[in-house]
Length: 287
Length: 218
Image (cartoon, rainbow over all chains, first blue to last red; front, side):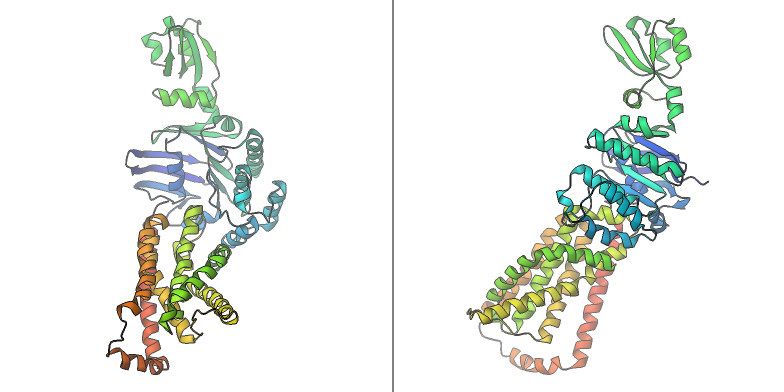
């Protein structure tokens, strides 16, 4: 099956920021977590995929098609959920959907009504009266109601309470069950991605630090803690983003076996979370 | 595209009260204009709806929504131009209610009677104002284009209301021309020429708007 999303050597420059020839790809039927600190380039990348920004250089292919030359065809098959609400707040969801639905050839009213009922969204109240969670749920209902094969979500859980976040993640897990749909999920709330992501791409200052499966990320990195005296120059070669204080050090280690040998078994090794990996990789040099 | 126009109607119907207020105020302001009053009111209030349509898009940052969907730029731009006749119908209906009310209540404000020529010229006025406004709006967005909007809007109103003051006595050369207007109103060739002018102006404005909108980033 063809790659669903391919970003290749993409460059986009603004004053004070540059996406520096980034590349990554997403296979069908998987969830990719797109993580990075605020201002790292996640939203810029997503806007380039959605053609909201114009590429300076590089190529983006969605469903094997050039995202610019085949824009309409590509967007028929993409569902999107953004951090901000862009629906007209003065309209009800009934009015809003009446305007949106005809643009999608494969709009499914049955699926839409099912989600609206499931999310308990009031059809006759104006969108401006909705809570943040309700607005996100409406966006998700729309995104899932036209047989989208790729869901692009830009920090959809930002500002949501844990219950709504959990509900959203459950729905994403359901959506990819049939392996027809893939999800690109950008977030700096890495605990959400710990739970659902199959692949992880880390971006920092406009550069991709890694893009690989979550299993491989956790195989590659371990968290090491130990006394400061263990921190020799040879050990440092295997460490990423070292945190030192007078009592000891903490770091991400890229070769646990070597680190174990060099510390003589005196250091503690733990499995890191995605948050640890993001923090240490962006703090130091990533391998 | 019709659903983009439907969206504008959903949003603009809230402006009904504002439309009544504007029409009433302008009926009062332009009452010395005689037959030109209807043209000026339709032009000014119709243009107000054009501008408000842009304000709604900016408030909701809806360009991000439409450009993320399978909606082409020419549909987004074209819908704005095609909504203009609907705004004019709206204004004409409001004017009808206001002028009828003024008459029934015997309020001493002179309101020009309905005439097809006045309505057509009013619509042409809105198209001309929108054709000048929309390229700037589509290039820069509502917020950055509002200075241009104010120049156009107040330029129309101030110019229209200043005409009687600037020309208290009609220039002699104007009389033969004004005398010919009823003839010209029945002259198909004049309407065809006017129609062609409007089509060329609006067509050129649409193409400029589309080109500039395609360059924008959101």
